[in-house]
Length: 143
Image 1: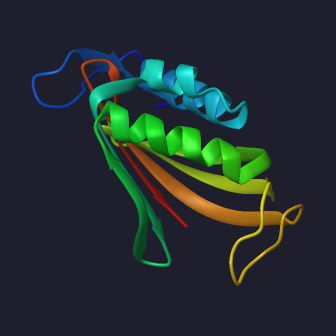
Image 2: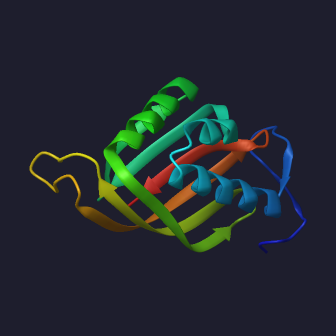
């Protein structure tokens, strides 16, 4: 399925994307994220981007629209001095893409009642991406 040239509808009334294009967009998003490239991330997302981070079943962060998402993305660049999402699995149902990632990050500052600056965080998580008009329209991160 990964390299299939089949066309898939990318959301309501949106342009068609191939499964290969969807995977390339997710891969590029991870590259930008790992390199703290907020401008690169913003080039990939739809103006009406919806984002949620769910940790242990609780929504810990969310953004709606470009401005909120950009603010959240910029804030996240200050939380870690180093970070990397390693792609472990990729799947698609033709409408969305789901990835399993291993997350490694070095904290840039102390977290109240939690880990201290310089400590390394290791998490496993899953992210689901939905597409519209050839862009990433919705991201849900779960860990």
